[in-house]
Every structure is written in C-alpha cells, then in structure tokens.
Image (tube, rainbow, N blue to C red; front, side, top):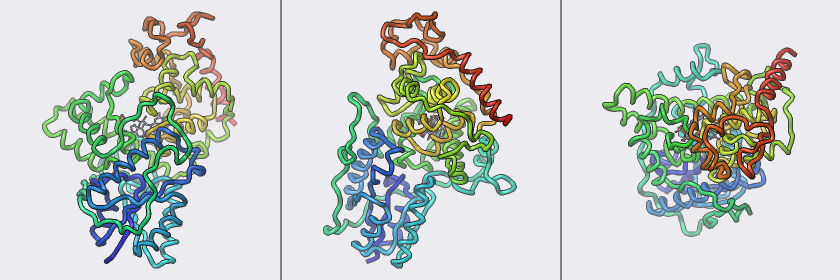
Length: 468
Ligand SMILES: Cc1cc2nc3c(=O)[nH]c(=O)nc-3n(C[C@H](O)[C@H](O)[C@H](O)COP(=O)(O)OP(=O)(O)OC[C@H]3O[C@@H](n4cnc5c(N)ncnc54)[C@H](O)[C@@H]3O)c2cc1C
C-alpha cells in the first residue's frame, strides 16, 4: 500500500483542495496532518482572535475528515522535524502540500524538501491559495508589476483555473499513529477578551457566508462597500486567509451568478473581483520583495524619521484618540478581530500621518488582532496607507478623519455602535473637532491632536526626506 502525508496549512478544507486531491489520486492511503506552530517564534504575527478561529477551523476539519472515514493527525513543534517523524512512523513516501506565498512558509518548504530527499521521499507542492501566483503575471519585459492597475489588467486577461472535486472518502489513519487532542487557546496560554464575538469557523459556515453575499449583496457591492455601518462586503477574508474557501470556487461562483446580470450588476461584481485581484497583487509583491516585511517597498522612503512614542500608540490601540471614527474602528478590531476596510485605511493613515508613528507598529498590532491577519495583504495595506508602498499617489494622499467620517458614516451609526459614550451626540457634531476644551460627551477624550497641523508636519517630513 502506498502512503502519503497531506500537510494542511492555509487550505483547511476538503472541497477543491489541490494537493489533497493529488495525494488521494496517487496513493492508497493519505495521512491528513496539521502541525501547530511553536507559539514563541510566531508571537509577533498572531493573537487570540486568529488562534481561536484556527482552533475552531481545525476542529471542523477533523469532523469533516472523520465523516470521510479518516481523522486529522495533530502534532506541535517545528514543521520539518514533525513531518519527518510522521513520515517514518507511517512509512509514507511523499508529503503533499499547497504552496505558501509567504517567506516563512517558503523557507519551511525548502528545508522540508531537503530533509525528505535525504530519506528518499518527495515533497509535492501545488498552487492553491491564489488564481495566479509567483511569476504568472509579469510585465512585457518579464519583471513584476510595481503598481496595481496594469497588474490587474494583465491578471484579468488570464484564463482562471476551474475548481476541482471534493474529498468524500479516505482510508482510516492506523490506530498506532498518535495525535494531540484538538487545540484550545490554553495550549498557548492566551485568552480572548471577555465579550469578544467571532464568526463561526468551518467549511459549511464559510460557504454560507459566501452564499449570502452572492444571493444579494454582490450586486450592491459598488454602493455599499465603503459604508462601515452596513454589511456591504462579503466578510469572507478569514475564510480565504485559512483556505476554508477555495479561491477558484469563489471566482467560479461569481461568474455563475453573473449569468443574465445587468451591466450595472456586472460593474458591481467586477469591483468585488478586483478586490480578489488586490489580494493576489500583494501576494506577488511579497513573493518578489520579501524585504517589505522589514523595510519600505519604495527605496526612496527608507529611513523616514518615524516616531516610536508608546503613549500615543497606546491611545490609538485602545480607541482613545478623541477622533470618533478612529476610535470606533480600533474598538471594533479589539472586540471582533475585524475592521471595515475603509476604516482600516483611516486608522492606518492616522497612525502614520497624524501621529507620525512607525507603520510597522500599526502593522504588528493589526497582525495580532485581525482574524483575517495575512502578512501580504496587511503589509500591503499598511505600506499603501503610509505612502511608502505601491500607491501611485504616495505620501501626499492624506485622509482627513473628520471628512472621512462625514462622507462614509454621515449618521454616525458605525461610530455610535462601537463608541457607546457618543450615543447621544447629534451626528453632525461627530464629524468636526469640538470647540477647544469641550468634550463631545462625558468620559470621551478630547482630540489628541489637530489634524491640519499634523498634516503639514507629515508633508514637510516626507518632502525633506525625499530631497535628501
Ligand atoms: C491597513 C490595512 C490592513 C489590511 N490587512 C489585511 C489583512 O491582514 N488580511 C486581509 O485579508 N485583508 C487585509 N486588508 C484588506 C481589507 O481591509 C480586507 O481584506 C477586507 O476588509 C476584508 O473584508 P471582506 O472579506 O468583507 O472584503 P471584501 O470587500 O468582500 O473583499 C473580498 C476579498 O478580497 C480580498 N481583499 C479585499 N480588499 C483587499 C485589499 N485591499 N488587499 C488585499 N486583499 C483584499 C480579501 O480576501 C477579501 O475577503 C487590509 C487593508 C488595510 C487598509
């Protein structure tokens, strides 16, 4: 009997899983495995929201595997050592896994391939996390695109891979193969804040979220996606992050939904597809320039004099800046592990262009708090907002938090939902600085700075740096 290991990583599903399907087609027995990372080496990049969602997604995957006649083998520690050990225990001849676009995942793949080769076994890697990856989308001169618009044109012109089949039957894992019990947050000695509300994890739940979006919201996406008080977007980012949904299936179902759609409906759906393209654009940025995790994407912006002030950073993290839209976003993030995209941009610009704090501080806080925290998209979003990234209009794009909230939360519904102290304040007063020394409501802080002044400071700092 030929045995292979399928190593689950960012593909926690049995539906249309490229590497799992390949392993099942080529071997009589597939051992499904997940290796829990050592918390210590990853503390900078994760936190309780995402770990809790991961625990629930793993439990749901195990239930699905048991229904198919198998079960998940869980181990903890260094992935290469754990997989080599499991390979020896099961007499497997190969490990199958889907490629990880991030540099840590790639390094592990490199080490694993070498370790397996020494044992006469093979590592099989597949494209799965994106429709197009690595060097599939290049300029005419075979270099990576530096800005999104031409990338998206090239991306859009390529044929998209169709979804594959689902796994319904697997051989049982031999009883002598030991597995850890399903993980809980206790494993890492961390807890969720009291009252934190997270979406349910699992394939059925992710499919339901996608289905609800496709049923109606997709055709109003163009109008509603920027309004944070509405459920106008798909809310599938955590499902794509963990591969609980297949990107091929998402794309194919959007195309299916477009049959017979009006041109207005098509336009709305196309904007949604372009967000899926942003996701892959940032994957490719990280693929070609992994150093963006430490430095500014654009060389010209390296060495900017960012501040590190812990006291203003703490006010930002806690949602105590005195800017209602910023505080609402930061409190939504703390409570739910999610923040609306428009508000992510507002709070990120506030951190970098009003507080002049290092974008890496905000990037790290987001990675610890976000349920969908994904290093490529998060780094891309932060560098875009800091003006150091792939944006064609970089540093001089400075959003005014007061006018942003007036445009996108005119009735103050979103603000009042997350900042209850402001529930009784008339909407118009939420979108302008209060008179000097006057609080918007008892217990709510005064604005910690004057936006117009800090905007000028930011512009002068960027300009002086570029001149140097
Ligand atoms: C500072 C900052 C940090 C961010 N960090 C992350 C992150 O860690 N993980 C993450 O998935 N997204 C991140 N984003 C992008 C975006 O905010 C979220 O993807 C989106 O809010 C998720 O909600 P949704 O699923 O309803 O999105 P929808 O609007 O329904 O979009 C559909 C999908 O497209 C992808 N997507 C949408 N917008 C973007 C974008 N700008 N960049 C890359 N992919 C996108 C996501 O996978 C999303 O689920 C960040 C944006 C900013 C400005």
